[in-house]
Picture 1 (cartoon, rainbow, N blue to C red):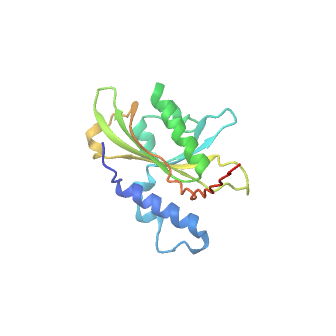
Picture 2 (picture 1 turned 135 degrees about the horizontal axis):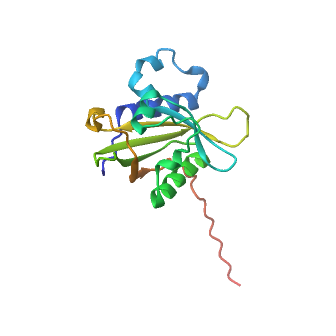
Picture 3 (picture 1 turned 90 degrees about the vertical axis):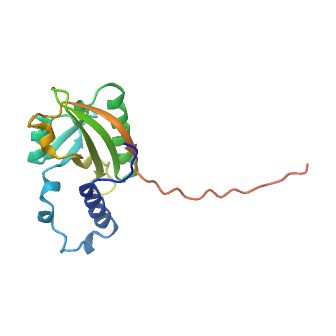
Length: 182
């Protein structure tokens, strides 16, 4: 999975997120959520608990079906183990800190061994209180193959394949050279 092209739903979500953050009052009324029903079914919102867990607050119906469980109050990081869990936790932390979206590619596997490629997007949601911690993220869980390949079986195991961390604009560093002839 070395390509950097993202699923059309991911591109749609990222462009909508960008428009909302650039000028929330100018968001076009011509773009409606109902225009993207397959995207809506795989959206979710996670919120950081006081213990540092990232709990699902809302999740589309298709996402619950794909993962084989009711996601209410379920820890998002529980779908990952070992080093993969630490990497996903780091990506979420960088999205939270930078307040910019991040993407990861993963391999999902059913109990019967069927594998699918998955693209997961995390984007910060505005906090209801100004100057408060960023503790809610909007997510998109997108299977990159047609869903029938799973034959109705849920994805139980996830392994990280690639990261696309938040793009951070770096300010140019201004250096000043001072010479002392003493």
